[in-house]
Amino acid sequence: MSSEAIPLTQTDRTHPSTGETNPAKSGKNSLKRKEYDEYAWFALFLLAASYFVITRRGGGIHHSRGGLLSSFSQPYQISASSVSVMENSSEEALRSIFYIAKHQKIDSTRSLQLAHNHQLEVVLSSPPDLYCTEETADKKCNTDDNQEECKKQSSNEQSIPFLSHLISTTWVHDEDLGRGFLLLADGGRSGRIWRWEVGGGPITIGRSLHMERSGCRSGLWVDGEDNTKMRNGTCPDNIFSGSVSSCSKAALEQRTSSSPPLFGSASLVVELTRDAERSSIGKNIVVAEWGERRIVRVEGETGARTPLVVLVPPPKHHDTVEVEDEGQEAAHESEEMSVSKWVRVRRPNHLTYTPFGDLLFSDNHDNVGIVYRLKEAVHVQPISAEQSRDAHGWERSTMEDQANQNNIDILFQTDALIEGLALGSDYSMLYILVASPIGKTVYRVSLDSDDDEDSVSGDAPSDEPNEGERVGASVFYSMSYGDCEEDQLIYNDHASSSVGSKLSVDAQGTLYMITCSSTVMLLSQEQGKVIGTLASLGSESFTSIGFGEDGYLYITSPNELHRVKTRIGGVTLPTNLVVPQPAKSATSA
Image (cartoon, rainbow, N blue to C red):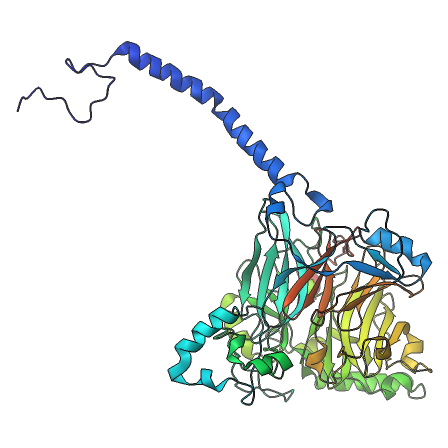
C-alpha cells in the first residue's frame, strides 16, 4: 500500500492529489453558512408565531380549552347544561354570573341554557374506590390460585381508581411558572393531594401527584378515639391493589360495599403572605390532617410540617352562652376550665384565612359543630425537618404547652354538623353552613366584634331563635330536605359523612351553597333569596365548591372534578392588612 494514501477523514474541500484545501470552494461554503445564520432567527420566529396562533386562537375566556388543536381532542363530559331561574327578577343576576347562550330566553322549565363550551363539565374522573365486605367480595378473586386471572379480568373490565374521596380544592399561583394550578385534597385512605392544571399549549397538562400520604403518616392517632390518649394504629394503604372488579358485579350495582376510611387531607389553603401580589401566592400550604388529628403548615423551603393546631378548647355548655343570669361569671368559669382541659382536635376542616392573618377552621365533636379561630396564625414559627418527624407524637403544637398560650377561641357552636365556611365579599361577615337532620341553615356571624366578647351559638332551624342567635349570629337562609328529590341522600348523623367545603362566595357577594345531593344553590347577599340553581343529573353527591383564578367555578364529588366558566371570580383577600410580625423586644417583654 502506498504511503501517499488519502486519509479517511479527508473532505472534498481538500484537493485529492495534493491534499491542500481549495480556497475558492471553502470561501463559498463559508459565505453560504453566513447567509443561513442571518435568516435562522426568522425561521425560529415563524415557528414560534405559528405555535402561538395555533394554541391561543379561539382560546381565552370564551373557550374551555385554548387553541385550534383543542377541536381534535376528546370533549369533556357535560354534567349540566342549564341553570334554573327562581324568579324573573333573578334572570339578570344569573346572566351576569354565567355565560348564557345567545338569544336564550327562559323556557317552560324556567331554565336558561348555558353557552357552548361554558357548561358544567367533568374534567377529571376516576372509578370509585370501594371497600368490599366479605359478603359482597368476589370470592374467586380472593384465592391465590385465581389472582392472575382476576388481574386480567380487572384490566379488561375497568381501570384502577386513583381518586378515593375528594373533599376540597384550593388555587395556587406559581410566580416562577407565571400561571396557577388547582390543588385537590383527597380525604380517602391516608390521603393524597393532587395537582390539576391546564398549560399554555394545545394539550391539557392534567393531573399529577403533588403529595403522598397527606393526612396520615405515623398511625399514632388513627385509633385514638379518646381525646387525651395516643394509640398506635396503622394508616390505610394508599396503593389501590386491585380494581373495582374485586367486588362482585351485584355489589357494584347495588353499591353494597363500604366506603374507604377517611384519614386523608380534608382541607387546604395557601398561607397568607403580607404584601404579596395576590393571596394565592405562597410557598407554604396549610393542611388539615385527619389521620394525625391536627392542622399543619407544610413549609415550602424544607418540607417540614409545622403543627399549627393540635389542642382546642372543648365545646362550651349552652348555659354559659344562653343563660343571662349567670352572666360573665359563668363565661369566665368556662374559660378557665377550657384552658386547663383542652382536647385534641378531631376532624379539622374548612380552613379559611382572614385578611389579618388569623386562621378559621371547624371541627365536629359528636354532632356538635364548632368554629375556631387561631389568632395570628401566620406568625407561628416553623420547625425543622428533624423536629417534623418527631412532631407526629406531640400532644401540643409547639414545644410549649399550647393550652397555656390561649391563642385559640371559639367563634361559633351549634348542635349540628358544619359543612362550610366562607368570608363575605367585604371580609366583615363569616357565613357558616350547618346541616341538621331536618335541613340546612346558613348563619351569618360578624367578625368586627371585640375579641373579648363571648362566642355565639346556633341550633337547628326553629321558630324561636336561641339566645346565641340573638346575641351575634343571625340566620341568613334555611331550607328543608323536603325540597330535594327523594333518592338524594343528604344527611347522616356521622361527622365523616358531612365532609367537604360546601359553601363559597364570589367577588360580588353571591353565595354558592351545595344543598341537595348534586345541586348548587345561588343566594343573593342582600336578602338571602334564591336566585337560581345549577343541578347535575346522574352525578355523585357534590362534596365541595370553590373558585379558581382561571375564571372557573370548581365542584368536586368523591371521584370527579367538575368546572363551569363564570364571569365573576371568587373573593380575593388583600395582603396588606396582615398583622406585622411582633418585634422580638416586644415579645420578650
